[in-house]
Amino acid sequence: MLHAFLMGVFITFVYDILRIFRRVIPHAGFFVSLEDIVFWIYCGTEVFLLMYHEGDGSLRWFAIVGALAGMLLYKKLISGLFVKYVSLALGKILEALGKVLKFLCRPLGFVGRKAGKSARKAGGKVRRFLRRIRRGIKNRLTIFLKMLKMNLKT
Image (cartoon, rainbow, N blue to C red):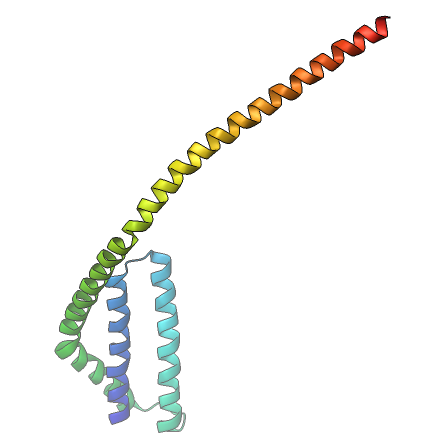
């Protein structure tokens, strides 16, 4: 029964970790559903292994009662405060990390803006250069065609 009680506490603890993850990093319903499916497959496997090893494969009601008692006791005594304060602390840590990263990336933004201006200037010069080459080629072809016409007439 003690193993079942601890299994109930453990399952609820793992779900609290999942709840903290969802609070700190919100995500779409599809991923929430996917997380829940993975969680329940894991829990089902753990409970099956507990029943297999402890009860020789037969269903023991004291194991179910022990797991439920562990879940309820953990939920009433620890879960609410644990989720609230750990998610708050992790949220603050992630917020601080975001500010540090924003500060550290500020020089990259400056370099990016300068590089963008330089690229636009260079792009303009390249376009003007290509336009001059195109005009020169066009003028030479025009002169060549005129000379060819004059030679064909004579």
